[in-house]
Image (tube, rainbow, N blue to C red; front, side, top):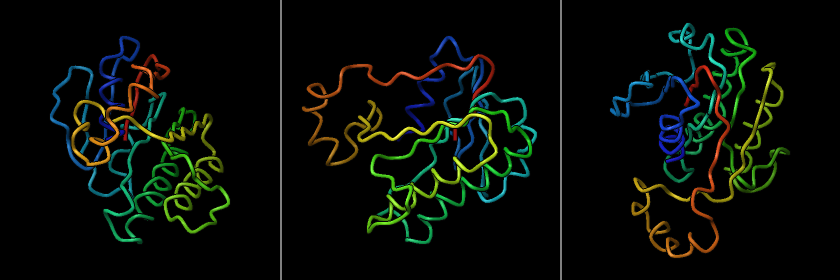
Length: 184
């Protein structure tokens, strides 16, 4: 959900010239700014290293809800995929501005009983300990589903009337890199 919303904002921003998106599957959007790369193995980015050079910003949105996969797969997706990308970027493009979409409640101590909090905390620690030049972590407490996702879950349907009360319209704004952007 987050990745598709971020991608939509990037594609419609006049300040962003091009977007390289890599993900588990192509979006099929066919936008003139968009280059899509299907990535099968998120533990190795050697096949796309050349595509990572020269980018100025990475918006890392790749994730999964913990109830959708096994405990082991959740840790792999949340922590190991990020680690593999960071290590590749440290070699190919250490000057990149890296923005991690984490979650409110992430525990940098990596303690507690909530799996997502420990995993997100470890992911944040990996980024903060990396050699990348600029690091940003976003910890949204709630993300209002866009039109595409608004009516897909029971919780989204139940809370929809409250969105307008608590979240001003258009409240998600992001900085705009000039040259290129990578969205995971």
